[in-house]
Image 1: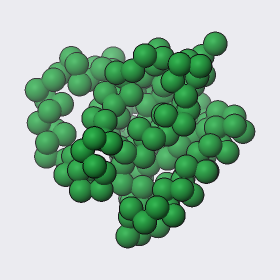
Image 2: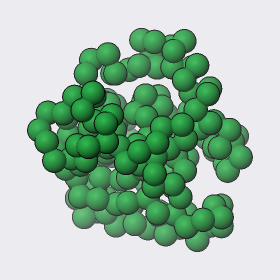
Image 3: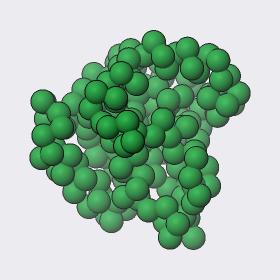
Image 4: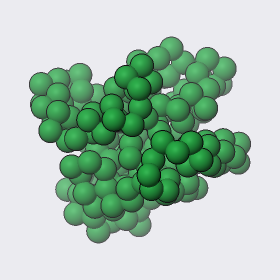
Amino acid sequence: MTEKATFAGGCFWCMVKPFDQFDGIESVVSGYSGGHIENPTYEQVKTGTTGHLEVVQITFHPDIFTYDQLLDIFWQQIDPTDNDGQFQDRGTQYRPAIFVHNEKQRELAEKSKRQLDASGRFQKPVITEILDAAPFYAAEDYHQDFYKKNAEHYKKDRAISGRDEFLEAVWEKSEVTN
């Protein structure tokens, strides 16, 4: 049996690869969630007016790779203290969030958020939202598996984003999955 997990962490291009390399992960799909229009396009979402966030939706086998493990990876990809976007990508459509699909996911997400906030790892409070899962819309094909299909563009974009420098400053190198 599989479950779904949905995470927003800024640009969805940078959120696929960290999850896409483990046994028990069936798929990682870039898309949009949380907004007020049906079937939004990238052009609409990037304006910040649809209410959608760029997200990845992960289909996983919880008996092989747990939701707690997914949460650990998620936190290590974002700045959980910044609700105005992530790194070079600014705007509400790039803010971090966890979309929970059931009460067990909510409990685990809230627990992990409390633990991270209490850890002292960040100088500001962890403010990443935990939201009920909303309709998910897959992004256009050219956004799927971008790190594989457009490796050079992906590497250049990630290199200038500031994401890696931030993550390396906050997490030990051995902890970060990117």
